[in-house]
Length: 158
Image 1 (cartoon, rainbow, N blue to C red):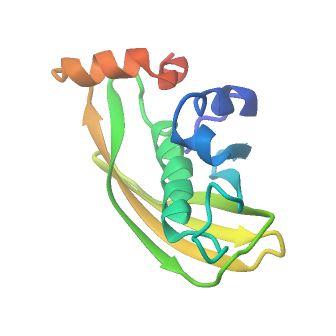
Image 2: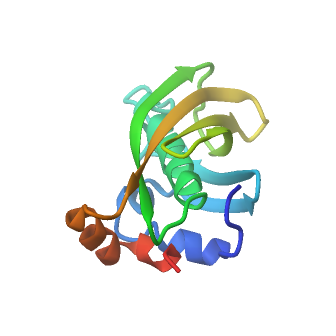
Image 3: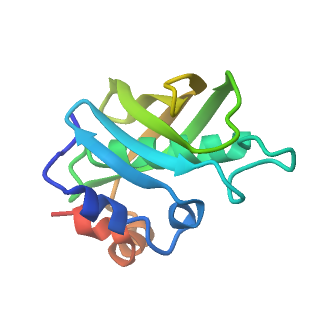
């Protein structure tokens, strides 16, 4: 289950200074069974023809799924990294916001699989994504340990 002791403000602080901030991704809801975020469909996230870029959908899906996965582990002993992402682009979006909801399909000791649904403001399915995360031990990987200590994710390692 997702650790819900963190506020949305704390989750969104982890977006500062990285791709999520540049794309306007904001976490909007945290629950033990899912994590939600939204992203604008604007000049940062559209194709030249003005519709949502599939890569932006993938970035949104991985952002929400990755943090959800990280919040499900013992963060003093483990960290998570993405193994695979698959996105089925169902329909287009040309403005407003899209929202992503990440729900766990499998939470194992070494892998997590997340289903992420991205919908537009009318709740129309835009993208269905599957994200597979690997759960790795912090030790003996001193590089990962150092990188996590420097990252905004260190706020969630208590």
